[in-house]
Amino acid sequence: MQKQPFDPVAVLHLFPRFQTREEYEEKTGKTCPPWNPSRRPKEWFDPNPIELFIGPDGSGYTVYDRVLTGKPDAAGAPALTRLAISVAEASTVNIPPKGTGATNVPGADQPEVYAPLKALSGTQVLVYRFGATVAVRNLDVVLDGEGGGFQQADRDLLKAIAAKLNVAG
Image 1 (cartoon, rainbow, N blue to C red):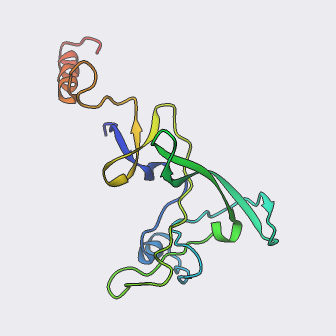
Image 2: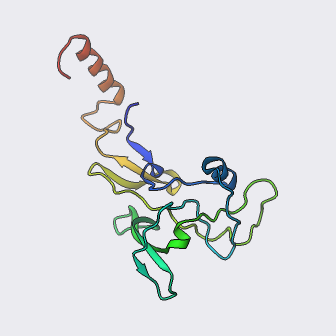
């Protein structure tokens, strides 16, 4: 499969996300923990969180280095921050009921706990796309209209010609 100029931010997630309770159960084979309206929605879990420090409440905490903030940085790009979270919270999901009959679920309107991300490579940056959706821009893939006016179709055609003529391309 040919690399694309943009990928969904999901390619950087450290852990799988589960959009529904049913998806969690289907993919993990476990019963989804009950929805807790006193906690923020959380669609991911760390199966082995590492306790890095003890918080003021006596609980063990872990830290993830890259989590979206939900706001742009000074340059207008999606901003990242660190997330310190209790080991107990990191190791479980909190997925509200969704679907038919699941309207006005108490607590489900809170901002979700964003999923930790892998480090960006040297050829990746985070960008906003349509509707303020965060995406990964692959800088090593030329966008149509860049690169001297050649479109992707032109580059593909030139590669095919070079292959047919058995010349380096």
